[in-house]
Length: 109
Image 1 (cartoon, helix red, strand yellow):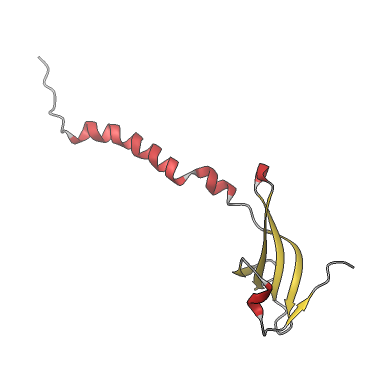
Image 2: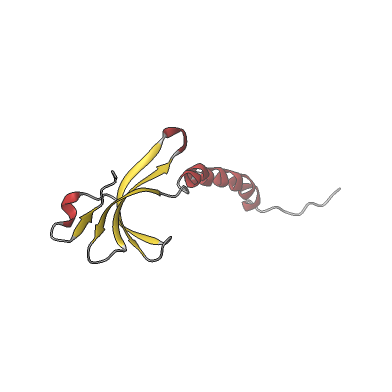
């Protein structure tokens, strides 16, 4: 006759719960959503430049979202260096900056 160690009741429950929790976690976090949001915004054109600070601009930007086309936005950005900037406002509207000195850039030359 073999002597079996007495198994606790928690061990079989944990063996069944860990895969279920893992699957629920993957569905909740959705790794594909993380991959699709990793695309950077690309500047298509500069529309306005602040007269007081040349690093403060309003740009038209696009982001590729795969088969769905492109996401577009007018973003107010402040450049720290040539390639590093902070987005101050993602939904730029002409009415947002009443009283500030902006110089419109003509894209048609």
